[in-house]
Length: 373
Image 1: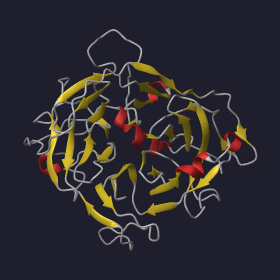
Image 2: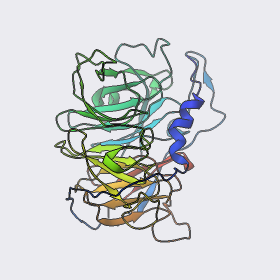
Image 3: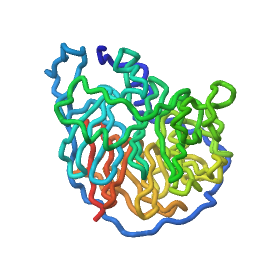
């Protein structure tokens, strides 16, 4: 299987790197509050990975183009579990594994649970990543229309020499959606940003992994969804369900989505009913603290606060879940002269158990690490 790149899909994935038009309507306000206001300073702690060497060769044994360890074309999804960091690259179709200090461990190409991909069933394009408390890594693939779930111990059991041609079979594969990003609550329910279809809530059922929604599929996992494709911040409608990151609180009571097209963070309850938003009341792109220009990635730190990437402002914001501003990180923070750790195109992000922050940065083909203190 030749690892050729799907240009149309890359344009879709990277559409979040370009500006988004402002189409907003009547204001709303978030009905939730919370999150501690611990004062983190986030000094830049280094870069993980670098741009691939263009002399990298195709492996004749499996016709796969591959980079060397710790090389990327487009680092995209990021997830942290324990001492380990997982980074997806939709160009090369692989997921690389590092320690949270930046040491390369291993890599693999994600296969679905039936083994179809390794046998020529399609090109994996891993995008969003997340982990749960039970030791699973979740990987979204909008090209194949699946969410793959891996046992992290299976990933770590691989030797580094598995590269290239290292296909790892998923523990379970959920089909019938076009996922860009995913988050998981403590009950295993998945909250998915589904390309063109808004947001969806999917129940865990490893024995029946066809997602049932709206009469299109036969599975019984589908629980709820939002309306999608409407350029409005009224009622939680989404202007850009393809582009944003999604995160759910551990108890599943609140869901946050980076709605870049409306320049807000949409807020939903456990049934994906809209309860407000965070950002400019008219949906305008601004540089003000607590407001956004093209918000994309969104996660919760260990203190219960939001961290949000902004493509338009080239920065990360830290806020309480009620929208109170706490800190800036990155190029558009509080200075105009470039400094170490300034990030031009922040996409998705993760925090580890120490609250250290990791942000995918395609502009340098790496992931930036920031210390929490």
